[in-house]
Amino acid sequence: MKVILTERVKALGNIGEIVNVSPGHARNYLIPNKKAKLADEGNEKQMKDYQKMLEKKVEEEKSAAQALADKISGLTVNLVKKIGGNGRLFGTVTNSELAKELEKLGAAVERRLITIEEPIKTLGDYEITAKLFKGVEATFKVKVEIDPKQAEEMKKKQEAAAKKKAAKEQRKEEEV
Image (cartoon, rainbow, N blue to C red; front, side, top):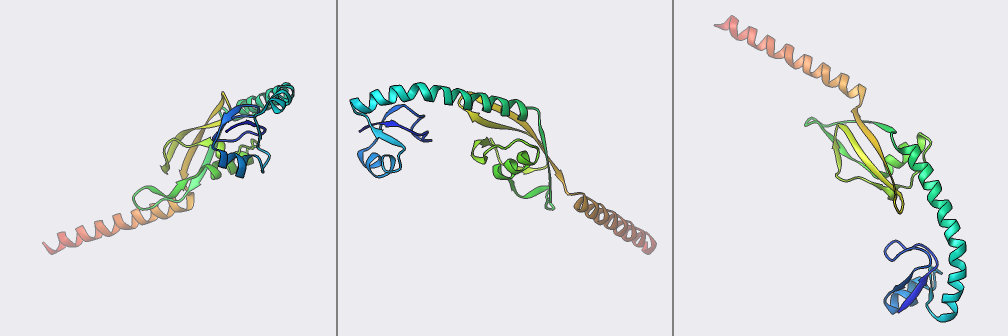
């Protein structure tokens, strides 16, 4: 069944496109939710007129996305995380967490638009891509650092372990 999309549908396409979908999907989801219209001659003519208005709207959205991309590109997001004994993070850094941090820096990006290529599970620097619009992408850096309090605790534990080891070796020498 051919339908004309009146909204952007992630799996199907953009506004104004004529797509072929199953009759059940069109009848039960797309048409009742006003995401699509039946592709007949009357609707096609109406969509051609509507398409001209949409082109302006799409151009405005693209320019806004480009401005946001310029703002995001080159940003560095610093995250302070706790790590386990093996040097790995408790959990992973998520795209919703990155979206919140970007919003704090003044760049509101929807979490679904942020793409993390491979899970961030260790400390270090990472390159993350945000696909803001079709053909508009922004790359920013994420720096994952250890929590300063935890770093201090770990340092104290290492010093205590080193003292214990030195005392143990000294006792062994005295016994001999």
